[in-house]
Image 1 (cartoon, helix red, strand yellow):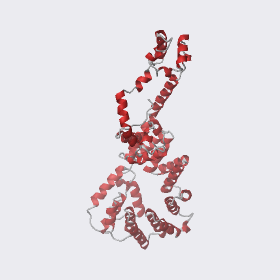
Image 2 (spheres, rainbow, N blue to C red):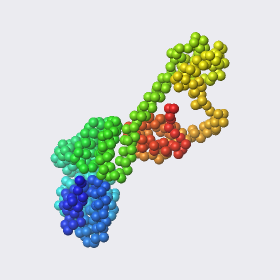
Image 3 (tube, rainbow, N blue to C red):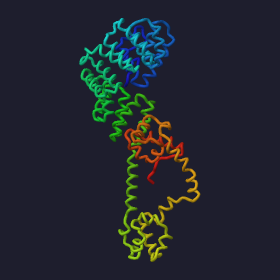
Image 4 (cartoon, one colour):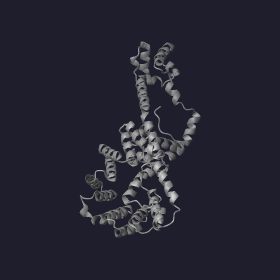
Amino acid sequence: MEPTIEELGIDLFGSSLPSMDEIKKLSEFVHSSEKNQISFNEQVEDNLGRGGQKAALAVGIGLFIIGRCTEAAAKLKKAKDCKEKIIYLGFALRRVGNFDEAIETLQEAIDYGVDLLSITLEKAATYRYASNFDAADKELKTCANFENVSAEYHYQKARLQEAQGLYNEATDNHRTALELSPNHQKALFHLAYRCDLSGDEAAAIDYYRQIVSNSPVYVSALLNLAVLYEDMGEFNKAGMCVDKVLNSFPNHQRAILFKKDIESSKTMIYDEEKEKKKDRKVQLLETPISDFELSVRSRNCFRQMGIETLGDLINITEVELLSYKNFGETSLREIKSVLESKGLYIGMALKKEELTSAETDELSVREDEDEELTNKLVDDIRLSVRAQKCLQKLNLHTLGELTQKTEAELLGCRNFGVTSLNEIKKAIGNLGLSLRTLD
């Protein structure tokens, strides 16, 4: 059974402040489950009212851990100067976008005994977050002597190269970081993600599996791994990844939606069976009349009429057949018997497609309105990022193009699940539109 925060033995609000390594361990533990987050949040709330510089330091660090960074910075500024205060204040300022102040604060940490390499790399990361890539590169160059020595140096260099679009170079540096530190979780994750984007799914799966085997619950890695498994049709493995997330974070919305997608994908075999039935129906309608035992008179009449298949017969009425010379009631009964044996009847297709004259008139009046609506861009309707990306992959730009697609065609796009499908159907349904059907 997973230990509680109390059983972990690291008390941030005790008589003495834990070490930096212990605080890092505490932070990782807090973020390993929803239960731990709630429990730690309660501890922070219980200590918010405490006065004094010592309490301000502990509460400030606690607020940073739970992501309340603006409050964390305000509390930490009231604490007594020490390396813990300076480091976490710098982190909090960076998180809220106060990059210049964060840089100045981190620089001060050197005066409190924090090693120069760590501070330089944090400053480089801060400049990267601020999109000041030249300054970040300049910082990294000052510690180039740690090349092939420090995993964190290569990781930070790789992150900067990713931001600059230098993906091959970034991949090389992530790999070097892992050679130096095989369990560097962040380097593993970004290398896995880079492999995933470049189409090397086997390598991506391998890296993601390394992460989840060495980390309690690395949510992003688990969900990305689940996507890859789902794309491969390995729905049980995908479900196991999502279940592991939900076991620790039962209210994680992305995981909840993804689980529904996976469950829906498992049942898509029934849709495939439906498509097979449709194919068999098409084959039936293409069956030549000559395949059936008919009288010579009937065969001659059909040849003269240009009727060659069963499909031709369900597109003609009894009146039309009887109007042909030499085609009488006997021939009509004969062909009706053939069609009934196949579950068909004369004029069947016409009844399905028939429009009254009133409906035809209404249709012509609405044509202009429909054309304006179908020319509307899909970007103009509110869709999730995942749904938008899938439509981009399918090169669908207007609602008209979208409505010409079937549900099966959309679900055939990678990463497009039933949740996204329902989202799109609802959005276009509100506009009076629908996807194409094959019925």
